[in-house]
Image (cartoon, rainbow, N blue to C red; front, side, top):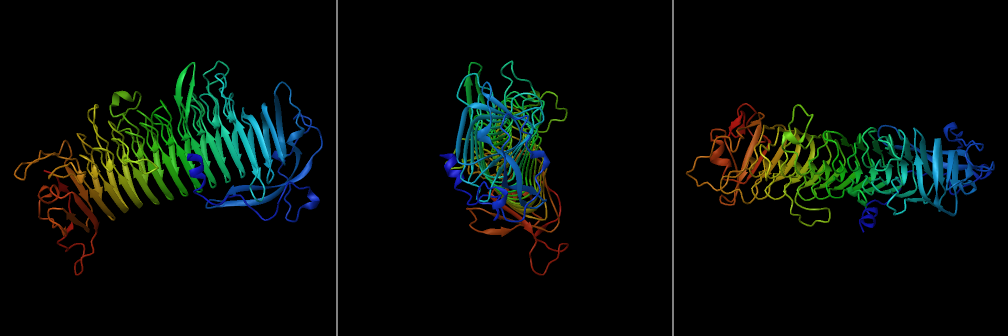
Length: 591
């Protein structure tokens, strides 16, 4: 159901042209004709096929820094149906094409050196798996309409520890997808497209692809204890780089159950106990669904801590974490190194107790992170410079409420936060139960949970806490680091259970009466830094309207009892930054 739903999001394939309409010989092809690339020229003496070949047209894609460039080309290629298999496998190098329908379910293609498969319009090719090992490169091309299909499915057997397309031994290789329809489902503890597993003595620790690049087409990767697209299980030596430039791309992590136990993978990124290098999304429509303990995009189950980077520059991205995993970021008790969003349209949904963007459940205690000298949190550094971002700690991608205790942006339950820096974009962040919109989740069993430094210096930000969670700052029982605001518009709303002493910004404080004195620091929080020329307005249901707040009032006297607070750049007529009596010009101390 998820696959069908996500395929409906986008309407067009990417790598298209007006030159080729079928697998054609050269006398049927109109100009321009591009000289074949020597790296995909076949060598019929080494690949087990006969020597007959045809001039085949295809579309090659590249990235020019801002968009996908599509170049029609022609190559001398062999019909893949002419391959000769020995003992269930065949080694290929050079260029091959498939027209019509052809199935080789019981045989394996092993890529040696460099190989290309051209999916003719309307063609259907089914294989058991394609192994890309020891530095080899596989390129998958389509034609004008992009209607060719490649399906690779590893059988459901307890002893199949292979990716459908990718590396299962050696130092891995590279896979490029330029178009067409590619559906890949991996075997035990393996990725759909990416790495295999070293659960068996047959495999080494290096069984990951070095690079996966998708320029367009419809690509669906389903892991089975590995990532849908990315790393396989129990592999840390090779850090896979995943580049998505365009297309309709979906990665599903899944469960692998065998004699060794049950393992889980991220939708795009890491597998069980595996590293990945980076996920870089530049365009297209990308959806990712993590399984239990895994992120939608990011870390897999029990992944090494403080490894992995997610960069989003454009496109439409939908990421759903599994239980205890972030939508984008860390898995259970795990965090990434960095999450950077520079553009695009991003929807990130936490699994129960993970953050929408940031950390999975846990990792709040430095003792859980051996080898990290300067522990500051489990969310990884989060930087947003642009785009439209929706981050939910309170519901899933279907819009259903979840019983999760993670922040919208920040940490999951019992997790601390690294630095969160926002300098642009439009951001909506919704906390889960007793969690902040931006900051920490609820402190449940760990101690010393802190929101870290939250710096907002641009953009438009809306943050909604829930229960005892602050709008921006800390969840229930957690503490809050520095909050700095300037040159932007920020609206923060406290959770409904905060009581009259609200935590729109900062930490919650429960149920004090109007004559009570709030403890200094609000469970460790003591100040907010605000740039000059910032206007503060607050709203309360008791007051019934929005009102400007002058700087001669104590912070606690006007903000604690008003659950909605808004900072924005001064727009009071008749005043400048230096003389406006309604605007903040100094640090506000919460005492």
